[in-house]
Structure formats: structure tokens, C-alpha cells
Amino acid sequence: MGKHMGIPPKNIILFEHRPTFKAIYGLNLSLYLGVNVFSAATLKEALEIVKKHPIDFIFIDNSAYSQDTAKKCFFSLDAINKQIQMFIIGPTDLNEEKFHIFDQNTGIRTILQTIAKYLNVTAKDMAELELDAHYAIPLEFVVPGWICPRSIFKRQKDVFEEVLLPDTVVTEEFIDSLINADIEYLYIRSHERLQFVNSLTLQISSLLKDQNLSTEDRIDLTATAHQIVMEQARTLGISESTINLATECIASMNLLVHEIKDLENLLANFLKDNHTYMYKHCFLTNYIGLHLIKKMSWSSKEQQDKFSFICFFHDISLKKDEYVKIHTNLELEALDAPEQDKKLIQNHALVSAKIISAFPKIPFGVDTIIKQHHGSKSGEGLNKIYKDLSPLAVVFILAEEWARLSFESLETEKVLNKAKIVQQLHQKYNTQVFHKILPHLNDLDI
Ligand SMILES: [Fe+2]
Ligand SMILES: [Fe+2]
Image (cartoon, rainbow, N blue to C red):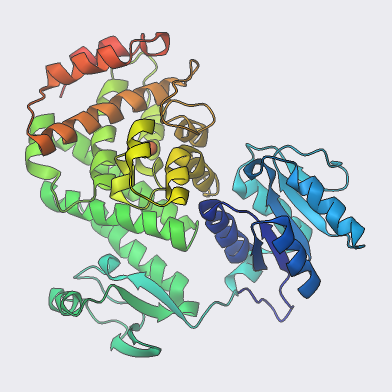
């Protein structure tokens, strides 16, 4: 919980019943504003909290509820004579002059800035935030050859034992011994977490910049960097160093797009089983999409960079490879997963766009295209194709489907060559919005 500069932290209620949104909002509010977050899924829970704790404000995404819950909340509080400030996203009948009301499409960054202003919180306060004494990092992110910047601990029950001293090199042997002992997480001191992550990120970044890396090593290193970015974005939240690593990683992926001359070679030799499907499908979608964009009259470096950014981040809200593979409502219905995970898959385009909009310095408009990456305008649902999709979203949908068909054919050993895939894409996307871009699929240089 947040504590800064000797001032007692503010208490807030995060009024949210969807687990993923709760995590995104909660993480951002506590990490960036240093507030104590109490979460409530229902009005009853919120009122219970109000009775027990002094609350400085309530944060509610009204679009998560079928009724005007913010309004109901206000009247319930008024009835017990409590006036609490509210920050409300989405439609409400409440008076705009009295409350902070944001349009449903407002990015979380803007919302955080507004709240920070209201709380008088500065960037310096944020740097002095305190968390639990130890902070977990997945073992898979500890890379051999990497110089450990701070002490690393392993946990046995509640005891933390130092296993690596600062400035020692992480060896393959060390990692293997932990894997053999079934250890999945290592720990660092929480107050060192930012320096730690920055140091790791810098080391990976500088490795990615090495021009002499072999294609194979570059693919592996890019896969690790991709995973680090995904995990950091979900757990540590949004930092400039995360975005820098993502930028290096995207540049490295794009170098590979030029280096690997044909698709068959890429599939046969480079995208291997030990990589996550999440990474492989990002990589291949980017490969195909960039070749397609180059055939367009509107192609430019800016559009290509935007496209790569979208490929990299579009499924960031999905945790499991199994979920990344779901691409129709039918598959979703058949999936054996908790109801809340299914809901998230259904709306993952919207949730990804929300996560991305909290990043500092994102290319203009990428959140809108991420929202459209399954064809719907609102980012909800998997099957609908909206008729005014942005051209980059159209390219994305075609490239991702091509990638999906490629992996499917590898898995099932049903032979699908380039010509057959293109033919299937023509049949599947035979609507107006695809007409301008579809013909170019026939003459890609891959
Ligand atoms: Fe995807
Ligand atoms: Fe997706």
C-alpha cells in the first residue's frame, strides 16, 4: 500500500466488478497515485467500506454496470449524509460540475493525471512509494549471462534467503538448479525494484542492439524481451523503461523481417515450439503485415512503426497462450475456462487498448486500432466486422488470420501453401472494407 513523504495515504474505493479492469485500475491507482485502494464490486460492499474507513474519493467505471451505478451510489451516500468526491467513467446522469466525469474512451493516463492534480501528487512522491518488503520476479525473466544488479532472494515459506549477491553473473547452472528445484519466482527488495528492472531492461536492450547477433539468437532474445515487456506491463505497470525495451524489441523484430527473406524459412527454421504462441503470432503477423503495408500507396515509416507497435501489444490483456488462439465466438463458447476469463477473452481488444492508453508516449491512434483488432468498433466480441475499420486494422486482421492459418497448418500437418492461404482469405473477407487491400495479398515478396 502506498505511503509517501510522511503524509498519510489517501483512501479510495475502486468500484469495479470485472477482475481484469480491477487489476488494471487498481495497479495504476496504487502505483501511480500512492493511494490505498479498497475495492468493491457492489454498492453494498462500497457502503460497508465507507462505514469503516474515511474515504477520499470513489473511482467507478459506470460502463461496467447495466444501470447508472454511480448515481445510485451518490444517492445512497447522500442518504447517510456522506459527501464523497467521485471520478466516473462512462455515461451517468450525475451533474458534471459536481463530479469528475470522463468519456468512456478517455485513456487511463488522462484519468490518472486528473486525479493526481486533484490529490496534489507529484512524480517525486511516486518515486518514494513503499510496498511489501520483497517483490517477486518470474524465474523465466532471469537471463543467463546477465549481471545481477541487486541481491536476489529465494523464498522458503516466509524466509527469504539471499541466493545471488549484487554484481554477480547469472549462470546457466544457477538457473538450472532452480528449475530442478521447481522454483518459479525469485525475489528482490521492493524498494530496489525500479533500479532492478531498469538495469535488467537496459542489459537486454543493449544486447538487442548488437548488430552481430545471429538470426537464431536474435529471435530468442527478442522472445525474452517480449515476455519481459508483457509481464512488466501487467505487474509493475507502465514505465518509460518498459516502453524503451518494447521499442528496442520491435526494432529487433523488424530487423529480422528484412533479414529473413521468405516465409517458409521463417516457419521452418526460426519460430520454434519453445517460443510462446503469443510471441510467435505477434512476430508472424508483423512479418506479413509489414510486407503488405509496403504494397500500399499510403505506406510510410510512420504507418509501419505504428503497425509493429500494434502487433506487439494487441493481446497484452491475455495471459494464456490458449486464450490467444481463440478467434471466434464458437471457440470461446467451447472453451473450458472460468466465466470471468471467457468474458475477458470476449472483450480483450478493449482491455488491451485500455492498458496501452496508460503507456507514456504511444504512437498516435494505436489504442483505437488495437480496439478494432478483431473487427469490432467497441473492442467487444470476436465475430463482428465493423464497416469503417481503419486501414491498419484491416491489414492487421488479414495478417493475423494468415499467421493463424500458418500455425494451424503446421500443427495439423494439413498442407496449406501461400496460394491456398491467400485464397481462403479472399473467401473469408469478401466485404467492402477489405476490397482495397485484399488484391495486394497476391503479390507479397515473401
Ligand atoms: Fe492476436
Ligand atoms: Fe486478439
